[in-house]
Image (cartoon, helix red, strand yellow):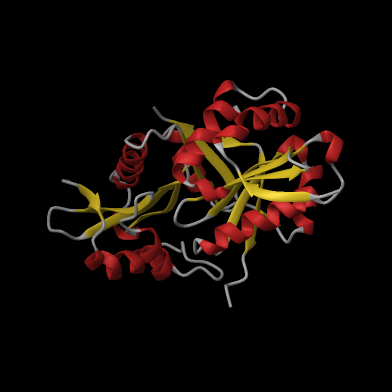
Length: 142
Length: 139
């Protein structure tokens, strides 16, 4: 299968946001549409997307950095088209995106229940860190 | 006591190094102030904050925003100045700066062996998530 990975265009918004929703990556008070618009095409973040030879969306990934670390979010592959290395290729493309910006440490978070995802990342070189993850939702500005 | 929260400058690097060597014993060289602070000041200068008491640097917090999530790193207060609320002042200031960038959610990681610190963050409204942090060094 020929795979093309490129930064997402504005016109990819609908397909990618649908994929993020279909992949179960939008939970709680998450808003994939808002996230897509916030991340895509920025100096310090972007959304990358994988397409097949017919231009159909196969998967996508959000990548960003904050000078200290690179972060991967919304790593997603069309559920009907998994098992062909698309996820691995997307992570590699995001790592290349970060390496081009001199980022050394790449981090991501895996939900506690998602052992399959943790195994996938372990196979491609990621290590689990023995840390306690904490999170806070900021009050939206008035 | 007059404590002021300030944006850090290049001139603070030596004092930040002293603070971090006291707070984060055993740090690798790549995590020391001389390596980390210039990168942050060049990239997101508003997100590196220090606490000063009468001009003396006594605390730090380094925030990050990756376009999606806010991150908090390197919260440190000099041992001589702990339990006076300085960490809380630093955290509130960092949250304000992240909020100004459009950030709606902050993630942070506490070292597993340092679980007492989790109470500090819980009091500030942070909740423990069942997420796992995974990482890889690329180069």
